[in-house]
Structure formats: C-alpha cells, structure tokens
Image 1: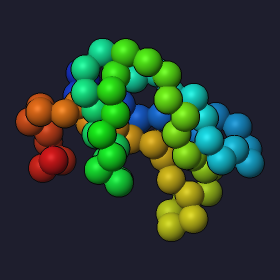
Image 2: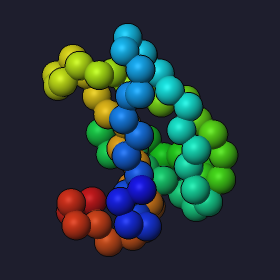
Image 3: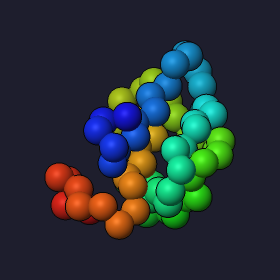
Length: 71
C-alpha cells in the first residue's frame, strides 16, 4: 500500500503471468485498465517482471478518493 488510496502489487517470481492480490475493504479501480473491483477479497491480477510495454505491475486506486495521479 502507498498510503490508504494506492495499492501496488509487483511480480514476486520470474516468469509469472498472474498473482493473487488481496484488496482491502472498499471499491477499487485498476489503474491501467479502469476495471472496477470489489475489495475485501482476493483477486487474480496479471503481472510480469518484464518492463513496459511487455510487462506490467498491478496498480489499484481506491474508488472515489482524490488521487495525486489525477484519477
């Protein structure tokens, strides 16, 4: 967690394509795809250790909060 509004879930293993992520309670939005997620549960997120554009790090923003990233 970066504060209470941003969750970053980097890849932890080589050659991973997905990883489990526990979203805290509340509603969340996928930073890169805008997909809404219900918190308080585990989800499966796509991930990669490769840098962009091939890889991605799952990032989620708390819905309805003012974000320093303009979201």
